[in-house]
Length: 150
Image (cartoon, rainbow, N blue to C red):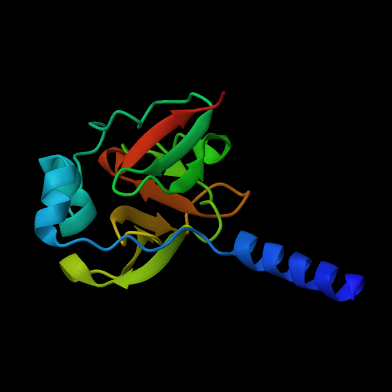
């Protein structure tokens, strides 16, 4: 009986720990109330900030970059590098928190990256990154909020 209870407890703990936070679903009007106009343009309308204009482009403090829409952890500062593209670049995302999606807009095929929790547009990922992963997550600063390492 004790072994059964311990097994069930361990299974429940594993199950709870493997799920991420719940999806955040809001109407356009609800998003407009909680996001700035720039954040709304990028996160909800798939806009892009001008290169070299974002606050995190040349920002290298230690911590976590989170989604400006729902506060989900997206990128670790240890994976940030200067790609000289004009946007913050990372060689990997936090597993399970970023989704890749085919983007055929503007007459080209790219891979869009979105927040797995609120479906907010973050930017794009390219296969021209550093040797560590070969990936360059090219992310709009306005789609991010930074939390410093304590």
